[in-house]
Figure 1: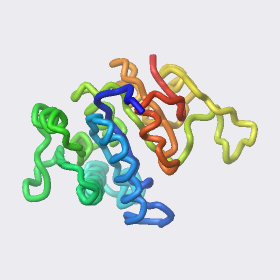
Figure 2: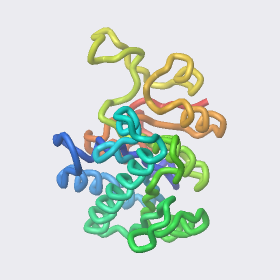
Figure 3: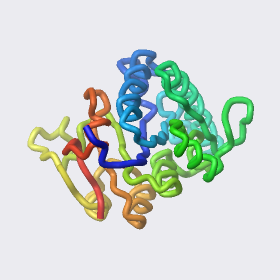
Figure 4: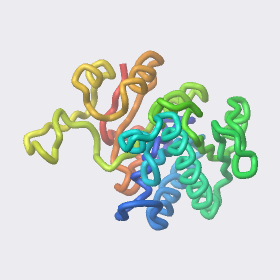
Length: 237
């Protein structure tokens, strides 16, 4: 199969790394993800990854329990670093060269995020994992994913989730919910479709960044999206 894109950014939720667990990192799931990334890597595609931290700590949850929002968000950023290091280990065990670049300086475990360094790593065939979100509180890892995708000039943002795409209603609660194959960012905002927060959606819309939302645990889905197959929901325009 021939890839449609030369450079992509893959957004993984922290929850996706839990597998069937209720908390933490599933070794089986992270190996599965590494295998899926390897199948795209073998096509010669330049791959950047942003991973969330919700399987370990989510800033909004801490805030709901009375924590200061900035403190809670910084804890969430550190959770993304833990996930990034775990993913790095799994990827390297599958023979891929990787670099973790973090928006919060921690030289002993990761490189600081410098845009030109990130692009150089990609051009040299390394998988680049962006950790610690944007480095600022009040911004989600979805916003960080859109921001990094724009900065590195990724051709598409792939959001791998637990669902197979967007619906016009909650398919769990409403059996008549209709699957949305393709839509616009404005429609997502106007109808409050739950795919990313409004800041991330607006940033993607303003910069004409296409987004595909698809189910992670269907084997070869990432590769199929990269090769231009009609998988999940595509959002653009």
